Image 1 (cartoon, helix red, strand yellow):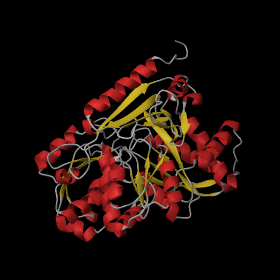
Image 2: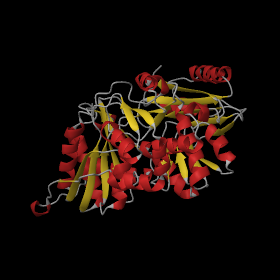
Image 3: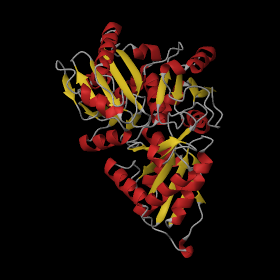
Image 4: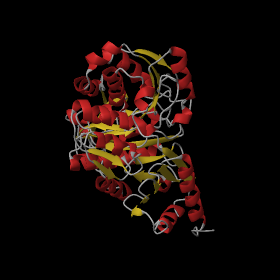
Length: 456
């Protein structure tokens, strides 16, 4: 494979290590990014994947070659690196992580000086510089060795401490279980929960070696070991993270995993009721349970395309106090507009402490929608053809085409879009009951079968 097989977009540049993502490609993108930024310090962090140190070495070499000063943080959660970029004099940062992708994958995510991932427009500019190979090359006198940064998560955790009612959480003396899937959270989740929130912690899959002990995406059906740890340990809650620690799925005290959307709904309820009310942002694939929650506090919900950068931009546009995505990504403006499982864990514990209820009791406050998430493998050529074919397939619905095809039938909806990170179409749908959800899924399959595919 060549770099033409890389997936490049708002989620960064990612590929399979040794195939579509090589040290040479990582070096070239780092040179391109350094060329855009100009001279100055650039943060470099990574997750625990075995390929991380190799890619980090290539990235730092590319930055040095462009005349930048790499500042290395080692293994660090994405929100920590984003907040550090915003709080420091760095010109930007590069985060080396493929998030929920399986271990053979890795990726580069690019951060601006304000602590946000690059906008789509700036990503396009970066790709232009990379493909033109018009890199700035520093002379020998301007080459700077990497400088390590100690305690890179401290500015992040300081903001979380200031935001949460940590005294109330500590009074709860919660016993919790956490599954960081041998990722970044294996270094940070237990210390955070113990030192910052006074919890007693039971851990599973907590070796920071990047060799995932389960599916790296923290879907409810992947959290069996965490559920068993909750039951065996008598825990109030279980926290399931993804490999880089920015997404969160919950397991209640009975060992039952909650849908990822409920992580956001519970956080939204806590923010609007006890911190400050205001607008909420959610992407198109997020459950209407978030709309129901915001309506309880008379706050509007604004929808946007999928992607953390899109949610962050919409939060700024609408001056939202909280936002997030259907995958367990919670974004709180007063901490930082980025997905942050650590803030999310704190908000869940804060709500348990304030209400005195169990998580299973809190769960019953929210409507029980029947949701379904499916993945349809497609080639790069098939995806746009299938999406175009679906544009007029739902005449009885209100259709939005800003992010794939979103059809809203009032009491149910379906969203089909091309993945930003994998060669698939992602399907998310929701209905009042399982039969309704099944009917939506069956209907979609029938419509897709009627669309001619390239090469078939």
